[in-house]
Length: 279
Image (cartoon, rainbow, N blue to C red; front, side):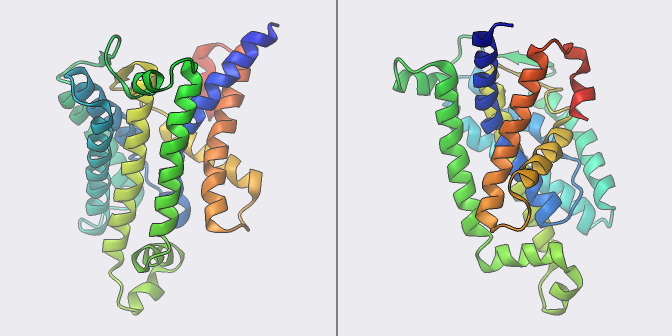
């Protein structure tokens, strides 16, 4: 066993763990804050990657493509929320319907191409590498992901301290009580799903750019990865901690998950058994 190769694999896992951690924050908002089983994240993750890959390939500023992916993910969340609150479709089924529809939508976005390579194209991590000459690729990805993740955590912490954010948290805890206080729980549910799927799509865009391609199937298994990362994060710090600590723990859970995967693959697990390990 080459310890240098192992450390290299762990180094790459740290970078990917932070980028995927933004997705974990989105999953945490729906499953733990809103108490909503949203299965559409498999589709919205790929939507973010598809939007970012198409726009980046066409020459759009890579950082602007992240905003476009964020907006696309928010639209996905709105669709799930609309199906659940206005069409009265159960949450799990609404998520499945959205996820299924997004496969065709993502293919449309990608102009009927299942994969869009970004080799030789200006991406966000290349921008950071040019800004920080001499810094390794993985370190640049860690810096990029760390800055964006820190900004996301700060914004989430601030938002859920506002009146609207507290209403969303209360909706997840006791929707009947919230309705008795005059709060429209349909609105808070849709808003939480919009925020969650926006973060998932943002993560998908970052992953697509750093791995060098966008794929229509890149979101398969995202919900399993997200839930596993949430559970690991809760085990790390427990659930009896303040909100900011829980958000940071979600990022930590994602990093630990990626490191575990990297180590197991390094030890000889076949790539076709990845989904079995993830589940």
